[in-house]
Image (cartoon, rainbow, N blue to C red; front, side, top):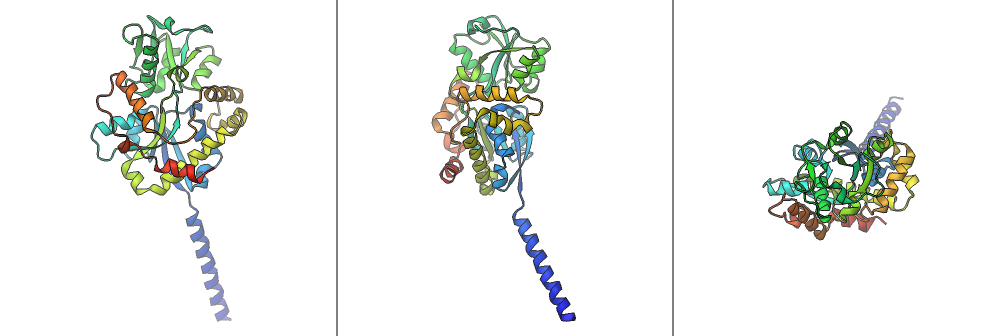
Length: 333
């Protein structure tokens, strides 16, 4: 009887040990992701979260809104975040500062500027010459939104500081509030903020900066060089999940995408989300694949140079790796 009891206990312990071992194997690895802002512009990322693509790769996302590329990069460099999602210009600045453990971009999501020019009046016949003598709240100096705005203005023969005043003294997170409070004649805003202002009658979209600016490697995922070297399996799983989200968006309707990302935007009506998704899709906002090309990075650095924000270009092979993006494309169809 005692022997049977001992055997029973040993078998029970073995089963419990195997169960706990299995649970440990299936534990999700938490990845702290800081995004430059929370916008429908990043729909494929939110699809990857809500459709469980990260969990399929063994990853649990802890998402934080960095409210600007400068703050987002600071979070990455200070180990408050594992991965940053922002314009790759931030990694250029960091590399040029001579930091040994600099940020490396490993996947690209968007290929157009995601902001819209918002005015105080409806203007279906808007032309850029109407900006002469006006003030635009343009965001932080040296940030991708502000530099792309300058690029677009110059394209329309408007010189910032001479023909039009571009304000760079208002923080990214409070630009909409400053505009509705009476500051400036125009402001550049991301969605859904721009459309929510329009819905409230406090501002009206008159132009798409993304459509005017053309192709730009606008938002990418980056991490410290040391983090990528120490956690290649996490970076690969993360890239796989993002690519799954990109493919899902390519193969689903705006209505289906809106439903998928609705939990991320509880204050936005589904009809507005559908409109915004179609708007971003129509201007070819999202990359078909996550590879950040050398040509794309050089074009972005050219825009930085035109804005007077860059003296030395960062080497592509130092601040970009395409290893994980290419592997994702090979393994996921």
